[in-house]
Structure formats: structure tokens, C-alpha cells
Image 1 (spheres, one colour):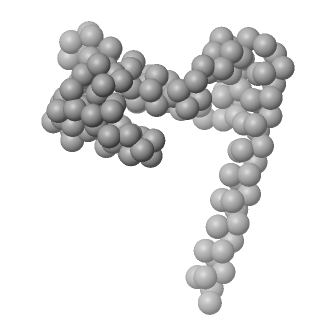
Image 2: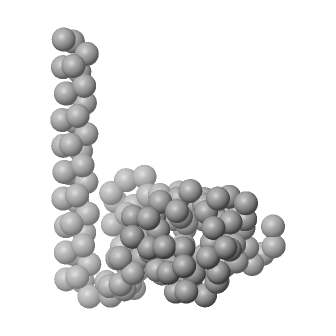
Length: 137
């Protein structure tokens, strides 16, 4: 693989694009390529797009490049995620940059992360209990 190319999951990119309600043509215009080229990436026939394209997609989708190329493992716990937050200058959310150097802003995001994880754990536990009840009927 050329040093200027990265490995991405086309299926993941297609899912993100569709969730954002964008067409291949729209994404191609924004990122600076052709719909055909993006189609090849999404179908997996072109697995190594240029770094420029990956950067454009990451910015458009509001995701870190690592999420698109799958090289960085996601944080394994809340502490790791929050540590990353406080090390960053900005975070991307739905394509918008949020300056997190302001401690108040970072603290609000940390609270949201902790609450979101707590709610997710409650949901997981609730579904687990419902599945248990269904199996015992």
C-alpha cells in the first residue's frame, strides 16, 4: 500500500452517508472527487482511497479519521474517552468543530459522555432482563 493511501470499510462509509441523507454525487462534490470513485470505495472494489479523500469524508461526516480507517482501537473505557477529550483542542460533532480548550465546554461534554454511557448501560441491562424473561416463558 502506498504511504498516501489508507484502508477503509466501504460498507461503513455507505452506512454513514445514507444516515446523513447524502447521495454519492453530493458527497463527491463536497469531497472533491467523482461519484464513481466513491461508489468503488463503498462497494469495496477500491479499498485504499487517498488520504485527501479520507480527510474530506471524516470532516464531512464529523468523525475522526481513525474511525474511518479503523487503525485506532476505540477507547476501552470512559476514562480513556474523557482523557482524549481533555487532550484535544477541538472535537468534531456533525461536521462542526467545537473548541474544547475552554474547560467549561470540555466539562459539559464530559458530563454528556458520562450520562450517555450510564443511559446505555441501563438500556443494555433492561434488554438483557427482557430477553431473560422471554426465555423463561
